[in-house]
Image (cartoon, rainbow, N blue to C red):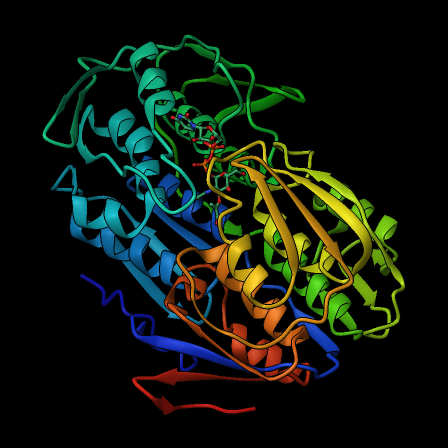
Length: 447
Ligand code: EPU
């Protein structure tokens, strides 16, 4: 079996006690290339198990979540090669162990995306319930209901789903009670090898779902988005291997847009698609951030810090094409610099506003009204803190706040940030930030 460990020279293994040290107040300037999308890459790697033939992916981000997915696939007997940086090849000819353990689920909720493809191809799987994390309970009932609708028998014992499909899965109509991204993806993956036609409505409209559909079509699957919120799948007996380049990460792009805006910088994002960020870019425009977009690049010019040039806004997260919940934390950081009181509404997850308390400790004027609503009044002069992060997007957003703050912040639990951002410190360093990784009290890099 191939060695899963990426040999990429820039990859550094995750150390749970690592911290990021950020000295704020530097103006970011230059160009940054946005990496491949985490939430597309994870599903594409899982989709490759629908065939025994080799699949090849380019522009895969070198991040911890991808490493965990690769390791999980290898434990199943899937051969994963990593012939060059950001390139992965997956061959699932000899899957011999249809069991996704608690260890994988605890490290990464997205391991549950293996349910659909493995069930459809092998007719059975035992998979751990991924449970909850810092942004709410995050149940998987809708994924399980979708498999049930496709004809699977599901038993839940001691934290594991035992799922079987006697014969082939059967096409059906799947009506989710509300939009679910991974639920839609699991249903599409399972339906690709089912007998007959499956109609999913409402289906998630996130661009990552369409990247998955594009790859499945290359594999020979008959999958199509027939209306904005409807996906239809005509199941095939067999799919073939295919090559695919992972779409750019729109959440990473949004993070760098805010970094430029809050430091009063001038940054060009290459490999960034404005079409994937419709509401977010409208919000930034209304706040007063200068933006100029081309088909695959975004130029951002921030207002000088302390200029009171940004205006308050009302934002509400929603499934695509609405404002992505993953961009709520970076947008909140920007709103600390806006003149007036901004209103935030988080509609997708519970508990995703809790991190605002840390932003408050940095000097932001934040009022958490309830689990779904908050107010931010500004502009605030942010100051450095020592803080422990518990989730990926909140962690990256505290880095943004630290870049805009006076003094040197220490952000502990930085491994959460590495779950989803490729080379984040190097990218910020190249834009002129002062940022370094600290491990057990020892500085490893400095800017
Ligand atoms: N939900 C259920 N039951 C289910 C599934 C979802 O009640 O079986 C609820 C969730 O608790 C939530 C809502 O439905 O309240 C929507 O969740 P969704 O299923 O759409 O989220 P997801 O597919 O689990 C993906 C991304 C998240 C992103 C959300 C929303 C991946 C691996 N994760 O999660 O990304 O926030 O969609 O866009 O694709 C991140 O990258 O940091 C991240 C959390």
